Amino acid sequence: SDVKPYPTQCVGPDYRSESQKPTAVVSVGVEFDTVTILPQTPQLIALLSIIRNKETQRGDFIFYSNRIIRLLVEEGLNHLPTVEHTVTTPVGRPYDGLSFQGKICGVSIMRAGEAMEQGLRECCRSVRIGKILIQRDEETSQPKLFYDKLPEDIADRWVLLLDPMLATGGSAIMAVDVLKSRGVPEERILFLNVLASPAGIQNFATKFPKLRVVTAFVDQGLDEKNYIIPGLGDFGDRYYTR
Ligand code: PRP
Ligand code: URA
Image (cartoon, rainbow, N blue to C red; front, side, top):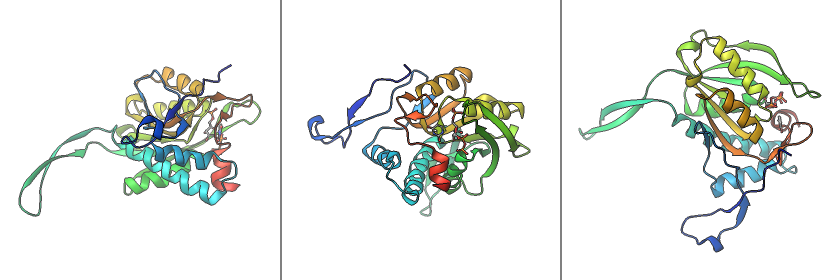
């Protein structure tokens, strides 16, 4: 019942006419201003096609997921505040540019979210990283909080919350509640996510109207076990153990 119609689109370089581009399923759209979906480029769709394929082995799953994660981090950084910053070049000329304003930290929702830490570290050298261990009950899909360890001054930082999968939204909502209980205002949290369900986005974005989300793709829906469909299966298992 929750399954959205298949949005297909011609995907390819702009210099090609529509009839010369291949067709692919692209992300479902969403109605929230706070949610950014990565541009549905040929590169992103090809990377997603690899990690969605059940035949893809663990080494490739890690490599190509990491590439998507890197795209998410690069886009996510565009949502942080900047200030004017002028530098002098080696030929003695000024360049009026920008620099980032404010401190950041990453917080991963364990286990799958830890897969996104490396991509964040590659872009933000020596970034502080906190952890929240939340596990979804396999029978009920309800999240359970086991552990958290967060930077002491987290309330003074922008938080990049990391979890590749947003299914019902229960785990991510629980993680944000932990962050808010430590004094992080909602508007200073940015959630980076690989694959979301429409219901997960709806629940999350309605509950936290000031929190920004960057996702690579909103899928069609959830199955009876609350797995995302068409999805990619269990991200944590495929990245870490399978
Ligand atoms: C997965 C995933 C999310 C959560 C999404 O984690 O990484 O944290 O489920 O589902 P939800 O939106 O319905 O809460 P899981 O609890 O399976 O643990 P894992 O990261 O160890 O695989
Ligand atoms: N967690 C996953 O890893 N995959 C899903 O489809 C849903 C939750």
